[in-house]
Image (tube, rainbow, N blue to C red; front, side, top):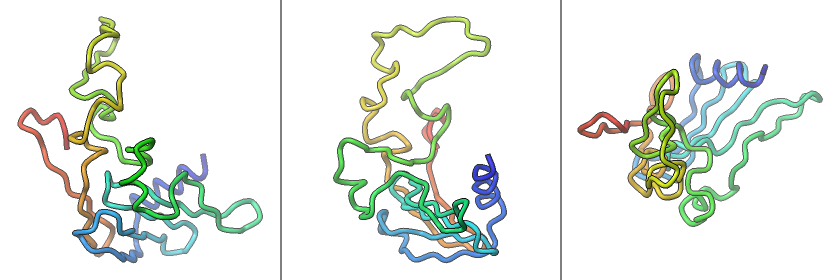
Length: 153
């Protein structure tokens, strides 16, 4: 739980930014470091994926606690993990054009083409798109676009 709050604090209260990538290369890493040096996160523009998250363990040694690749271009070439550590979109973009109701009033048809089939969503979903990142004074900006129906951002 402490790591979760640290991560949220890092994202919300970013003070010191070190950006090392161009806007045009979606596989270059962008590094964000907390001003006190307690946590460091690296992102790539491919799906705005978190590639590394370094926090101290109970012995005070920094450890990368995020599953990822040592070579960031593997996000592009590994078909087994096309959305590894990508940000989530509206409704988590788990089901393309999916909807839900609270309280649950109907059950989705399990044979529907847009029901629980994440890998059938294709390259036009938020996680699969290549997102340019831009260095800002107080963080890293990831730009997106909206569909005509405002379903994807």
